[in-house]
Image 1 (cartoon, rainbow, N blue to C red):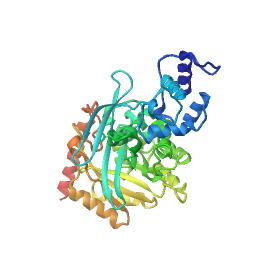
Image 2: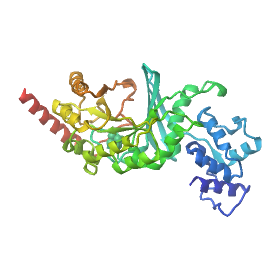
Image 3: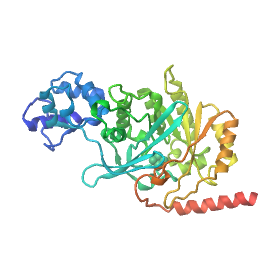
Image 4: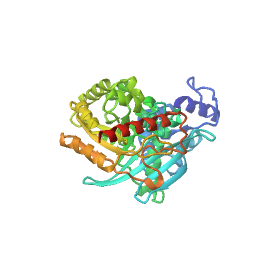
Length: 411
Ligand code: SF4
């Protein structure tokens, strides 16, 4: 796709013509270099009649110095810079809203696509721990999501489209740039230390674009991130977990949220297609690909705590049984209610009791700190007003009330 577009521009500029170049659909459309992996950029430069090493040079300017103007790329000849200006661009998604919380959390809403486009959201959460300071960026992979998990505000918006590699990596680019805007180019550095593919969308259903973006994250000529610090979070698209194991070494997280099929079918409907047994064995296969330096020492289990739904002692016991043969760390996430959300957040005591059961059994089990509440940046509060187009909210509220009544009557 990229090369076709390059060819189009070259033909329209009248600078070069070869048998491989096509007549342009849109003669003014420039190629966006932002989302190109090193291999793609090398091919791009070779097709221009340039040396491959230009790819590494340009990648560094884009992803390490956050330069979008070719004129600032001082180790590239003036002639090549002139050519690049005519046929390509470096374009991150447009920021339509940004908000920086008192606790250091930052949130951006980006417009993607032409015209009014669509909105996607990115959240950066800073943290201090014994390893130092971390800045973790939660990146979106799709506009909306087709999987319709019942506790998720993104799922309520339905699926619109996949993001392109430039739109995915553009979120990381913009988050880093936000710390460097006022810093001279030569002194700029990368600020984001960790990435989780855990924003809007199911990343494994936009596989190629997500894979390409993660390769740019790991590339030493771009962000040079440690593979242990790049995490892909999936709701459980089993065949793609196996494919991921073949293609790249990054950390894996599973949005589990329920310890049995009956409950998970309701909370995470893709479970009907890939039930828990298949999911857990896919995770075991993923870990089995382990190498000495691998990011695959364990799987992170994400478990949102929904009041009266999945937070009972029997659920903790079922979880222990489910995970007993899977090296895993468990992350309990206090639910962040959104407008018309069909659930409430489990009480602090309930979450702590749940954690204790898992920790006492030997699991590393953490409770995610709720951050960025003052800017609606917590997980599950992505983009805009949520219109629940289904009647499920009401149905679930009724179910929860019934369950709570049973719990109360049991004393
Ligand atoms: S939790 Fe993830 S997979 Fe489920 S609907 Fe939301 S974005 Fe999609």
